[in-house]
Amino acid sequence: MLSTRKAWLAGIAMVAATLLASAPARAVEPDKMIPADAEAVIVFNVRQTLDSPLIKAYALDKIKDAMKGNAQAETVLKAAGIDPLKDIDSVLITNAGITPKNQVLIVTHGKFDLDKVHAAAADFAKKNPTELKFTGDGKGRIYEIVDKDNTVFANFPDASTLIATNSKEYLQKALKKETGGTLNKALGTALEKIKSGKESLWMAAIVTDEMRKQLEANPQTKALAPKLESMTGSVNVNKDIDLSFLIHTTDADTAKTVAKQINGVKPLLALLAGGNEEIKPIIDLLTEKLTVKSDEKSTSINLNLTEDELKKVMPKSSK
Image (cartoon, rainbow, N blue to C red; front, side, top):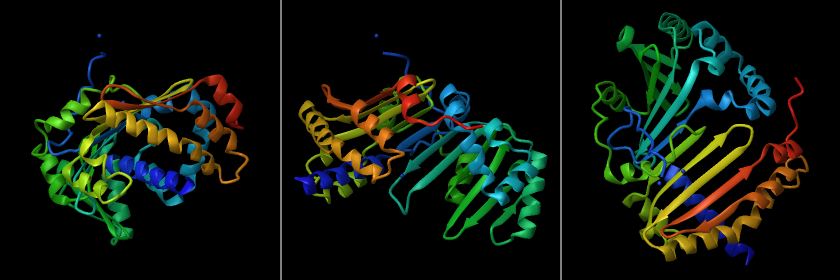
């Protein structure tokens, strides 16, 4: 029984990972930078999250400490006049295709002093020519960042936008707005299911034919593969945490099956603690509060953690 549940846990994890590489409220307004070929979209509202009472009380100091852990990055950001905790508003990530041939687009909205940014980048490139290269000037300058086997191409089209991709051609298309346009019908339908787009994080992803082939190769998800349509979800952080994800299916029976299988592996969340007594209360709370149920053509995964509940399991900042 345990091995079967572990297999299902792996299967569900595969579904989530594959969908990723929540009278109705008005649907989310798609960012104009979302490419027409996008199959998955994730938006992280950085400013809204960092300003939330919960993050200020329990995580902000830890985030600051983590940033100080990389001296080189801290030096470069300071020279470029960028404070990620103050200057970044939101991050949009889209994906098209299956790795390793997928196309990824990352759009960071915020405020940037381009003179400082370009000067700091030029200085870094001079000292680290194998890690950073650039061509062009001003708004046309394209950066090539090399990190081991990964290469990222980036550009600042204006003082409030940074665009990065894993392909120079894809970046050039984005800059020419050749990637934008009418979204594919399936993703457009998924985006319509998003509550408002003002949550701390929201996402939408469709199940493509390529994904179905991968899911069909796994015995635990083979039967579900042709009946999965998309996944949408959101996480909202304020004084409490609200998480809501929906797996959209072709019929009620499939939705019921997905819900049953997720509920079957939910007790295994306890394994995440791994004997760590510090995080065990958090895992126990997640296990208790996480609800999974099916509707007409969807499986919903919901979690609400109140401020009082979080106070009991999360150590407050010491600073």
